[in-house]
Amino acid sequence: MLELLHLVFSPQFRTQNRCALLLELLHLVFSPQFRTQNRCALLLELLHLFFSPQFRTQNRCALLLELLWHA
Image (tube, rainbow, N blue to C red; front, side, top):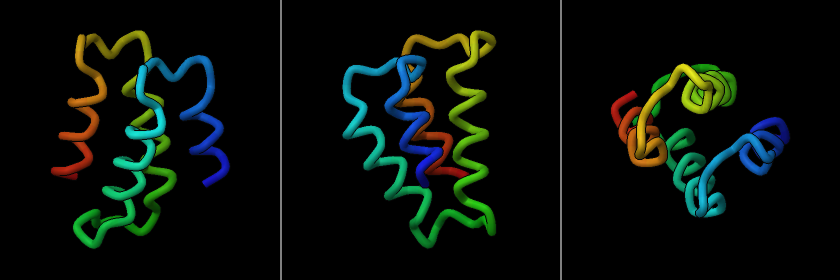
């Protein structure tokens, strides 16, 4: 969890509403609908991929929430 907080609040995390996004991510990742045994690791992998230069989109926050919702 500390790694997640460090990542979300790092300068590389590009969003204007970090607190709201973090709360949404935590709510989704730890909800019963999110089926995985290693939720923190998966979330960190998603965030790493999502904010990499190879990931090209204008609305990353919305798309990330959609990905997590359907994960």
